[in-house]
Amino acid sequence: MDILSADFVISNTKVEKCPQDGLPEYAFIGRSNVGKSSLINMLTKKTKLAMTSSTPGKTLLINHFLINKQWYLVDLPGYGYASRGKKAVEKIQKIIEDYILMREKMTCLFLLIDIRLEAQKIDLEFMEWLGENGIPFAIIFTKADKLTISQAKNNVNTYLKKLTEQWEELPKYFVSSAEKRQGRNEILDYIDEINKSL
Image (tube, rainbow, N blue to C red):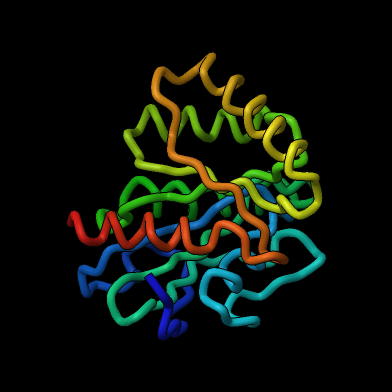
C-alpha cells in the first residue's frame, strides 16, 4: 500500500469525541522517546505530520490522521514519563486506557519498542494488560539503524525469548528505522491486509 494522502483530522482527550464515520483505526503507542513521531512521519512520508521533539512526552492528546480517505492512523500519548507529576501521569493513563478499551474501531494497536534496550518491565506489563483485555496488537522495534544488522537480530531474538515466558503465541512484529525508512512497506502492507479482511 502506498500513502497518497494523510490529513490531520482532530486532537482530543476524550474517546467519545473521536471521529464517528466508522473507518478502521490503527493506533501507535510507546514509552516516551521511543521514536513514535519519527516513525509516523516516515510511514506517511510527511516530515511534520506528527510533531517530533527531543523533549519526551509532547503527545498528550489522541491525534487522528485520515489516511487515503480510508483509515485512521492514531497517535496516542506515550507512557512512562519519569519527569511528570502523579496527577499528570494518571490523566495520561486514563486517556490511553479509555481509548484502548472503549474505541470499537481500533483495529490494531502498534506498540513501539526501542530495539537497543532490554525488555522493560513497564512494556511487558503493558502487553500483559493488552492480553488480559483481548486487545489486538503488534510490536514495532524502532531505531534499528542505531545497531548493526546482527546486533538488531540478536536483540529482537532475546526480546521474543523473554516474551515466550508470558505468551504462548507471540504477537506479530516489525523491525523499523525512521532514518532509513526500514519496515515501512511491511507495516503498511500489514495494515492493508487487515483492511481487506474487514
